Length: 282
Image (cartoon, rainbow, N blue to C red; front, side, top):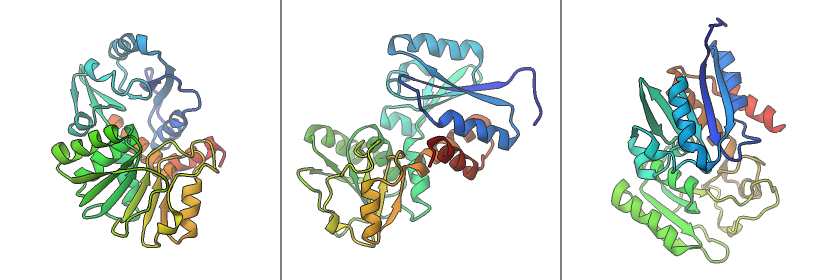
């Protein structure tokens, strides 16, 4: 790999960021692609975000990932947004283009790319559990990818209805809300069920309130949780004969997309997947 006097730098800004696996994936992918780039993981409190973005500009960073709590707060500090990021109202990936910083959101794109390994979402009916940032990003991208219907299943009616209104009015995809009370019974017409909540994070036995008996073997069941990758929901779905997607694929594909946005080079997804599994010791 050729070495230059000055390396290109990208980074992750958030708080907390300890344990974030993206740096490990990116550094392995840079080496595999023969790029003399570096990825830094930097803890930045909310009241220092403006200073941090000024620093990115001043030091010529090629790009950055933004994670909690900065995905919304960074928007007024940028020069422009992609159409998807504007719809979502959140940014997790920024590219420097000359003197300008351009905001993108790869959360939903990473999921859709992972889903396409099993099926094309175009024309499909999809149920999403939750209405937070992950649900919003995934729902917008699925709508833009031609989904026939998106059902938002949420405990808080107001927040769920906000997402449904966005999908109907701005994304122009048929969407409706189901108030989540007790175990969700998956309707027979649903093609894909997605857990976009935090249930299961760090707890392999945590039960997502879904009626397991309604998981038909024709259904694709996906979980955004990547640690542990085989959540209780995924194991239950496999036991019912469903095709499944764990959260590792979404995380890897987010990284693949960000890598291409910054470098213009297509990385090797297998290198990133292997690095992620090594980092998580799975």
